[in-house]
Amino acid sequence: MVGKWEKLVSAEGSCELDVCPDLVCLTSDAISRTAFGSNYEEGERIFKLQQEQIQLLMQALQSVYIPGGRFLPTKINNRMKEVEREVRAIIKGLIHKRENAMKAGEAANDDLLGILLDSNLREIKEDGGSKTVGMSMDDVIEECKVFYFAGQETTSNTLSWTMVLLAQHQNWQSRAREEVLSIFGNNKPDFDSLNRLKVVTIILYEVLRLYPPGTILTRSTQKETKLGNLTLPAGVQLAMPTILVHHDPEFWGDDAKDFKPERFAEGVSKATKNQVSYLPFGWGPRICMGQNFALNEAKLAITMILQRFWFELSPSYAHAPAPSPTLRPQHGAHLILHKM
Ligand code: HEM
Image (cartoon, rainbow, N blue to C red; front, side, top):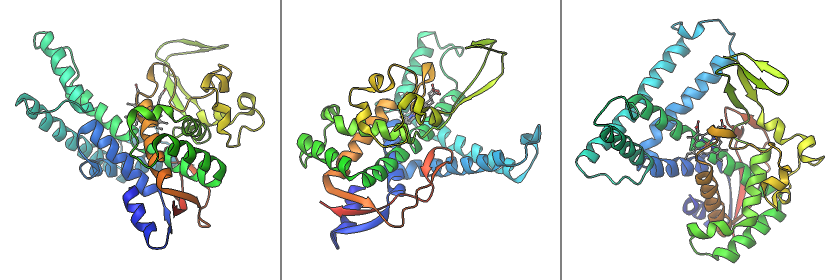
């Protein structure tokens, strides 16, 4: 991606572009490689189908609710089923290919799919080949679907908002670049030194506070549950709007809506005064399992961008955060990139 941008700026010294599509490709490629040992091109069909699924779901949610309507053979329902079948078939193909390679002793199990299948096979073997332990093919497919979806959109949106906010707040862009250059110079960033990025880290925390990709957390009660003064019966759907908590002056002060990374200077607990008011990655036993991966990926990408370019908002940028379904800049992130 940075190579492509370097070519674009090389002629005039600067160029204008919507950075969102390239950031989507970057994060898609990262999750395809690390989770499935493939690349963006191989995962592309799955990403496209999952995008279509989301659009169909949004359309369905916006139409009049008819009880049992999801079982009717409407155009949307039929297409949803077709898309789901195709996603499952592609993932099943990936799993079979990997299982066969593992049986033939060929596969390197250092990606998520390899680790998942390897531990599953071991568990079944240890139990004497019983089919009652381990994950079923359906379970493995569902896990893969979550990783393809959760591992891509969230991080690309975080990177898009980070670039927009750093374009709006040049002082923070300069501070972040100074830090990056003092740690890495113009060298390729190494994984171990990413921990030394303090300014970049607080910038990312503040971006995730103002623009959490998941704007709502949902849960459902499995049994009668006491919540404060409320007693909820089993089967109640609960929605907790993360974005409202993140923007609430009661938790964050009168400057809750402002971009102020310094509020995280002494860590998340100090910034939240130990209250549960910062939940970009959710909370509790279902907290995001990719949060460290996502933060490291974002730090790596921002480092490589800051080493090569400075950027500002383009006059054609229109600020329109839209939860569809993750919080994204609806009309893209149009920036002007300048060669350093
Ligand atoms: C900035 C990027 C990301 C954000 C903001 C984010 C946010 C979230 C949130 C809010 C949840 C729901 C947690 C809850 O209900 O309490 C979640 C779940 C999940 N995320 Fe992420 N995520 C990000 C990146 C990733 C990445 C890169 C991966 C994979 C490598 C990933 C994998 C998952 C998985 C597997 C779950 C489901 C966990 C479960 O249900 O047990 N996420 N994420």
